[in-house]
Length: 347
Image 1 (cartoon, helix red, strand yellow):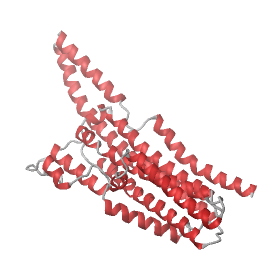
Image 2 (cartoon, one colour):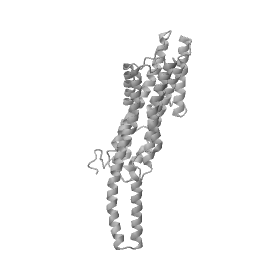
Image 3 (tube, rainbow, N blue to C red):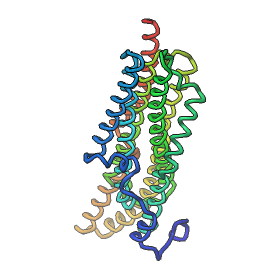
Image 4 (cartoon, rainbow, N blue to C red):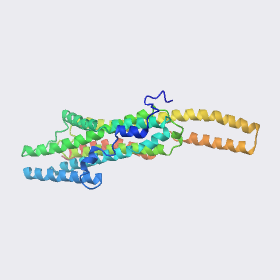
C-alpha cells in the first residue's frame, strides 16, 4: 500500500513536515485586519464600514446626491462578506485533518503529508491574489464594470470603480480556494478508504461543511446580483443575464459533481466491504450450524446485525438539509432575473 502511494515516506515525521510546509493558522486577509483588536469578522465589518463612509462622503461632496449610496453600501458589504467567508473556510479546513485520518486507508504520515500539500495549494496566498486580479480583468473584458451612472465629476466614477475593483479582487481571492476545495474532494474519492467511511458520523458532518461553503458562495452570488440591480445598467441585456445565469449553473455543478464522486467512492467501498463481510458471515453461519452453542449463535447474531447496519448506511455525503441548499442554488438566479424583469417593467 505504501509503495503505491506517491507521497509515501516512512522516515518522515508529520510534525517536522508540518513545520517544513509552514501551514499558517492565519490567512493574509485575517492578518490584514488583525491591527484592529477585535475578532476577524468584526475587523472586516469595521474596515468595510470605513470604506463605505469614506466613499459616500467623497461622492456626496462631488455629486451632492445620495443616489449612488446603495451601490456603494452593497460593495462595502461584499468586501466584508467575502473576506469573512474565506477566513471562516480556512479555519474550518484546518479541522479536516482528523476526518481524513479516520477514513483514508493509508499510513498516517502519508495522509498528513497529502493533507498539508492540499492545504498549501488551496490557500496559496500568491495564487489567491492572482486569481483576484484575473477575475477583475475578466469582468472588465465582458463589460460588467459598466454601471450606467451619470456623474458630474469623473472623481466619483473613479471612487466607485476602486470600490468595485477591490470587491472583485476579494471575490477572486475567495473563488480560488473554492475551486481547489472541489478538486480536493474529487482527489479524496480516488484514495483508498477504510470501512470507517461507512460507519463514521463525520461523513455527513463534512458533507454539511461542503454544503455550507456552497451556500456561502451562493450568498455572495446573490449579493452581487443585488449590486447590479442597484445600478442603472442592471442586468438589462440578454448578454448580462446569460453570464449571470451561467455562474449559477457553475455553483450547482460545484456542489453536485465533487460530492457525486464521493458518493461513487462510498458506494464502491460499501460493495467491496459487504462482499468481504458476507464471506466471513457465511463462515460464521456454518460454524453456528455445525456447533450451535450459545457463543457461536451470539456471534452470528452480531455479524447479522453489523451486516444490516452496513447495508442501511447512507452512501451520500449529504442529507435532506443539503438538498434544500441545492434548491436554493437553483432558485436564486431565477429570483434575481425575475426582479430584473419586474424592475424593467416598472421603469
